[in-house]
Length: 257
Ligand SMILES: [Zn+2]
Image 1 (tube, rainbow, N blue to C red):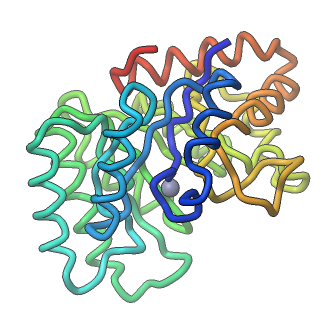
Image 2: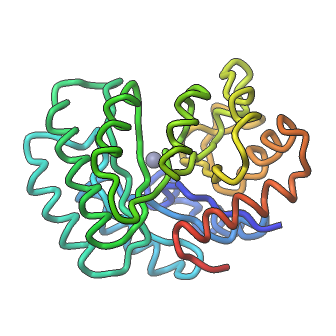
């Protein structure tokens, strides 16, 4: 069995004390590819340091996270575009709309999201999309920009089956993480009906730790608990979930094990 963690932030200082061990744990548990989306200009140095030091295991994405969209977002976007021109990134992320924490910069968030979807088309890269209390707005903009071969992942999917159907309609994927293991999330019942061909796995570490480690720091080796839970709800073998989701991720992000 081989796994891909399609969304982790291993460059954050939560891992400063034991990054080597965390990556070793992941590889020992067959999580051989760790895709790291950026947050904003303040994290680019650490992101590049990580992916250069662990090349072949850690891969970078470049983008401006919606909660980092502020007054200066156009200059942040210029930095993102300049980075993407270097040609070393595997996706545009993490991008999207977050209306849960703060709606002050809603219009700017919408604009930044649209600009970054255009970057994805220009550089022919998949996107890693963050939505929180904003599925409708996010989906509308994706559909408006849906030309060429724009594709990607709705990361940390926690929506309804109706949302899932819309995502499948446009050929995008859903990133399933620790929330599926949470007792009252109800996400397992939705995931049960979504074909595995539309799913990829992710931890979003250090956040959203799956059961049985909920409340502690998350790490990529915990992908197995997410895969196990999906296998259980679908009444399938974990090896089948691993094989299909890994193929999905490798094809989407053009990485190889
Ligand atoms: Zn994230």
